[in-house]
Image 1 (cartoon, rainbow, N blue to C red):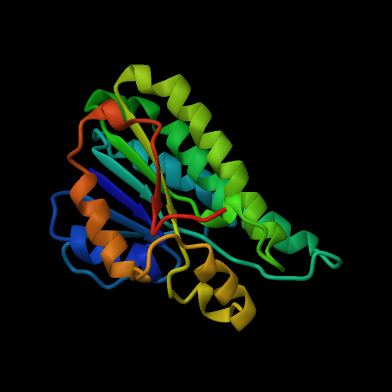
Image 2 (spheres, rainbow, N blue to C red):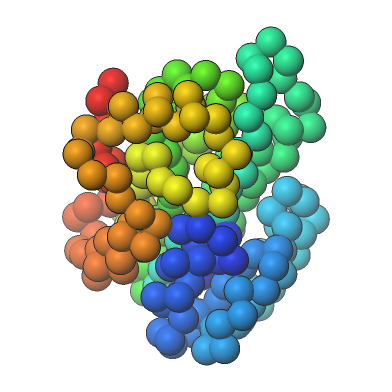
Length: 225
């Protein structure tokens, strides 16, 4: 079974299109991705009850999990002098708590077939992007949490990989200011800006890599700190 969150937009949508014809693909998002060969589960990852119900549903299939790709994300830009509590809670739920708790809850199903879990982090976890205290914090917390899951659970046979994309044009990043985008572009160490489709194609290729790569952090597009 293959699970992709955030499947109706951006990187998740590109991945859903690539994986949709694979066997037993489950797409998770708030909106229907409208891919006929995959099963869609509607879930708002800002809601802890919906996350709990999602986990129960996934475990109820009683199938081994070959791959989970956590793509769902939100980006709530605001001044560092006026952080919004609700935006903080929503962002941490989607960007950090959901991927960590879902992965943890499905440990047995992942271990049984030595499956892989790939989480989409961001170079934002390593940078000081103006106006992105919330987003960068959620990704930094995700990084540490996922590193610990990898350290604790890889011995069971699972593989855990973090991918840190550079600035990629998606609906989520469309609301960034030109200054924010230029800041992130200037922190990319490669000349060309990759697309969401190129990142999805890269992830599709690494899904068959051996579990020796567990714990890896991949900077897609590179990073200049």
